[in-house]
Every structure is written in C-alpha cells, then in structure tokens.
Amino acid sequence: MSNTAIKVNHLTKVYKLYNKPIDRLKESLHPLKKQYHKDFYALNDVSFEIKKGETVGIIGKNGAGKSTLLKIITGVLTPSSGHVYVNGRIASLLELGAGFNPEYTGIENIYLQGTLMGYMHDEMESKLEAILDFADIGDFVYQPVKSYSSGMFARLAFAVAINVDPDILIVDEALSVGDAAFQNKCIRKMEEIGEKGITILFVSHDTQTINKFCSKVVWLNNGTIKEQGKPEFILENYMSFMSYGIETQRNENTAEKEIVRLDSSQLNLKNISTLDSFGEKKALIESIGFFDENNISITNLKQATQVKFICEFATSIDLHNVGIGVLLKDTLNNEILTFNSYMYSSPLKYVKKETRTRVIIEFKVPKLNPKEYLVTVALSEGTQLNHIQQHWIHSATTINIISCDFVDTCIFSLYPKEIEYKYEQI
Ligand SMILES: Nc1ncnc2c1ncn2[C@@H]1O[C@H](COP(=O)(O)OP(=O)(O)OP(=O)(O)O)[C@@H](O)[C@H]1O
Image 1 (tube, rainbow, N blue to C red):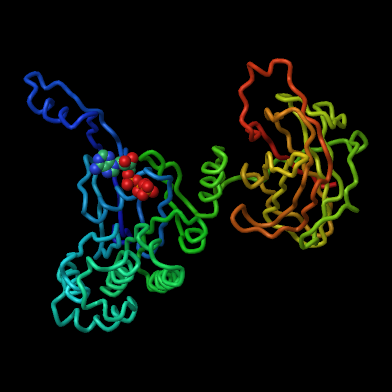
Image 2 (tube, helix red, strand yellow):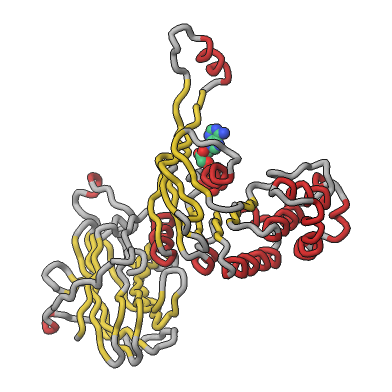
C-alpha cells in the first residue's frame, strides 16, 4: 500500500428521493415501515487506485457523480457503503466556500485553513507571503470573504491549497470561475507541483487540459466507472460518446486492423488529385469512390444498404495515427454528417513513407434525407483532439441518397454505427 495515494473500494452513495417533502414524514411514521422513497445511486460500486505522484483527471457528463466522489475522498460526505483509503495529507479545492468562514477576512481564513490542516500559527505565518503572492487579490485580503467575487475566492482558495504542502491535491471545477490568465497560472502551478511528486486529482470538463496534464483518466457515467486508463484512449472514447453517442473500445491493446486485399482492376475510383485542397500535403488523397457490396461503383446510395467508401492516398513521409474523415454537406453547404476513423477508434497506426495505401470504410447508409450531397474527404495525422491536417479536399465528389422501400420500419442513427475500417498497401 505504501505506493498508493488513494484507494477507493466498492464505493456507493445512495440518496433517498421523495416525490413530496411530506413523504419523508409519512415514511418515518408509518407503522409498517412503508417506503415512500426511491433510491438514487449517485455512486454505485466504484473502485480504483491512484499511485503516489499520479495526476488523475475525473471526467463525466453533468450528474455523473464526480463531485460526490471527491467529497467522499476528502471526508466532506460519508459513503453509503464501501470505503476510501487515503495515504497522506489532502488539500482540496472543492466547490466555492467549502471550509471558509464568510464572515472572516481573507487573512483570517488563511489561518483557519492552516489550523484545519494541522499547522501552528507561526508555521502559517511563514507561508503567508507565498499565499498572498499567488492569490494576487491586493487589499481585499483584509475584507470578509463574503464580499469576494467567485474568481477572487477561487484565487485565495487555490493559493492556500497549493502552499500548505499537501501530499494530495484535489481540485473540483472550482478553477473554471477564475479568468483565463489565472486558470493558466493554476495549471502551470499544478504541473510544477505534480513534477515534485504530489498526487493530483482533478475534475474538469475541459478535455484539452486533462489530455495535456493528466497521466490517467477515470471516466464516470451514471455513478459507475465507464472506463479508466491513459488519457489519449479514454478521452477519444469519451468524446465520441458525448458528441455522437458512439461507444468505442479504444485501449492500449487495440490491435492494428487486419490487412485485406481488393482486386484493383475491379475498382473504378475517381481521380481527385487535381481538385482544390489544403493541408500540409506531405500525404495526398489521390482517388475516391463509393461501391456496393460487389465492388461496383455507385453514386446512388440507398438508405440501409451496406456500402463501401474507398480512398487511396500516397505519402512522402512516415505517418502515425492516420485519420480518414468523410463529411457530407447538402447543396446549401450545411454540414449533414461527418465521421472519421478516430471516432471509431480505427486510425491507421503507421504508414511508411513513399508508399500508397487504400482505405476501405464499410458502413450501412444512414437515414439521411433523400437528395444530393457533396462529399468532402480529409486525411490527418494525430488524434481526434489534436491532429495535423495533411490533405483536405472540399466537395471531392457528389452522391445521391435514395429512400429504402421499408423506410418507415427502419430506425437508424444519423451516424453510421455499423462501420468497419480496413487498410491495405497498394
Ligand atoms: N443531496 C443530494 N440528494 C439527492 N441527490 C443528490 C444529492 N447530491 C447530489 N445528488 C445527485 O447525485 C448525482 C451526482 O451528482 P454530482 O454533483 O456528484 O455530479 P457531477 O458529476 O459532479 O456533476 P456536474 O458535472 O454537474 O458537477 C446527481 O444526479 C445529483 O443530482
């Protein structure tokens, strides 16, 4: 356990929800103990471990249970069952106001926090200058904190939390109330203390910050852990889930896609190398086309049928994590549908320089309005969060979506769900 900073074991927090306030009284007085409440699980059997020195991001949609989890770890809330093991002194920055006395001045609250953390008055005195320096709120430190703006409050609370030499720093979204310069200053400070081996647990909706800053991510959904692991994998899955409702299973062990072979002579691809485009252009998409199951070229795509989108590209450099994206616009230039290999956890891991590659995307045509669409294609390198556009070709081709005969009985998402990416060297 000595290398463990926090261990959360089968943690559950249940709230009793009553439809009417009177139901609570009725329940307590009922002779046969009739229940008037419904159990609501804010956390349900959550277990994970954080090693000393790790910086861990907690993500999840509103109401997922993030604040509840942090409050239980910091001892503000008691769990319904399960337990938390904490190894070291915690400094926390939870919701605004927690632990501060609104009637006290800033200075008095600094000493109050020090006492709560177990410091003597003169020990806190030696930290005062650094705290005031970081908070940078001028003479307001002599005013009661009830007169502070939320940003000023966050400044003072963060300045105290990082200067009381914690072993573990826990930060809920409190920083988001600070201005951009202060947020940046806090992130830099957290990076600095993270490098000193302090364990940091950090709730944020800002995936860019989590990606840059955290070594591990725990994704909470409806009170349970949906996924946990390295940010680069979990955040991709999280963003697909949040943006498109698509569940992907990208993880450290995702294997390279199987190589398939298509007979080139059967393919009737459209050469698009001369069309207007932008990007780094170290790798170029040369040709594209839509095909039916028998590899016959099509421009009419019938709803609910299985089709292939094929594109071929050449690269003059080594490429890593190649994303292929397709964007459909209607003739008024409205974006109607977009999908890419990052969203489906299927980027091509590596492409050697001076080679050509064929990408085959098999999918079921979604229920788009039956009409003409312009197809934009793009080739990028990186991740969904952070990629370099190598080649982007606006309106590379057009297709028509046509109704399937049984459309009333079809239920499709606008995003192709049954989709498969395959790659072959050509
Ligand atoms: N005292 C309470 N009584 C009943 N339900 C509660 C109580 N406190 C929290 N909840 C519920 O527990 C769930 C988890 O809340 P929590 O604040 O932990 O979510 P969160 O992930 O931090 O959300 P957000 O991103 O919006 O801050 C929510 O559905 C919330 O309504």
